[in-house]
Structures are given as C-alpha cells and as structure tokens.
Length: 121
Image (cartoon, rainbow, N blue to C red):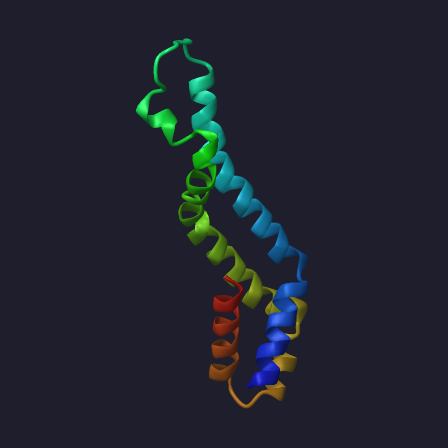
C-alpha cells in the first residue's frame, strides 16, 4: 500500500496539469476576491473622508485575508477537475488496465487515489 501511495503522489506531483490548476486557482481567487472589487472603487469619485466600509477589507494590510477568502469559492471546481484528470488520465493513456492487472483489487486502487488526492489538496 505504501508503494502505491508513493507512486500516486509522485504521479500527481510530476503532472504539469496539477501545477497549472494550482496557478489558475490562485489567479482566480485573487482576481475575484481582491482585484475586481478594488477596481470598482478606483473608478468612483474621490473624497477625503474615511474609506467606505467595504473598501476597508481591500486595504493592503488586509490583503492576505481577503485574497485567501476567495479560495473556497473556486475550490470545488478545482477539486472536481483534478479528480477527473486523475482517473481520466489513467483511462485515456491506457495505463488503467496495466495498473489493475498488477494490483489485487479495484477498491484498493480507488482508495489510494482518493487518499493521494486528499493529501495533495
């Protein structure tokens, strides 16, 4: 079981698509949680009073919390795509038949893939 887990983690780590999804997730979360709300305030009228209450969450000292707040919103999409690519990649490349002929059962293969996806996420 440990060898299967190490192989699955290596395969997920070495895939370019895993890293591309991580980059897209980061860009989408930062764009929709920080950049777009901030750009709506930049186009408004200028005043010298205190910033509006919604703008306070967009100030630089709260950037990390605001940007990280967008990650759960897009997380379901990224998890679904990564799961489909993990199982669909094996099937599309024709390696699923080879893996199933070497491992004792399908349940173990599915369990290893689910645990590896959980660790990667």
